[in-house]
Length: 93
Image (spheres, rainbow, N blue to C red):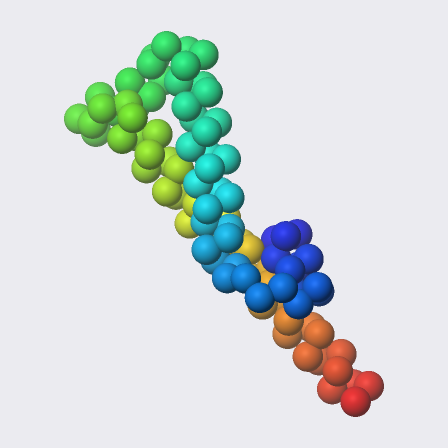
């Protein structure tokens, strides 16, 4: 939400959801790959076996969920500050 607020304050023309999705996916996927390499396939392998999926699919799905949630948060943050800026303009304009 902080990056969304910054992009709206500086009036950058970027897609809030897409930027948040890409950042969130990279962070969640990268973190899960790190944990999977640190603990050699134990956690994600077990979670994958509960759903009859390989561990890499679980890592990819968690990256998608993280990307979607981060995209929604960034989109909400941008819209919140845009709406607040519009209300400020109406008060003083």
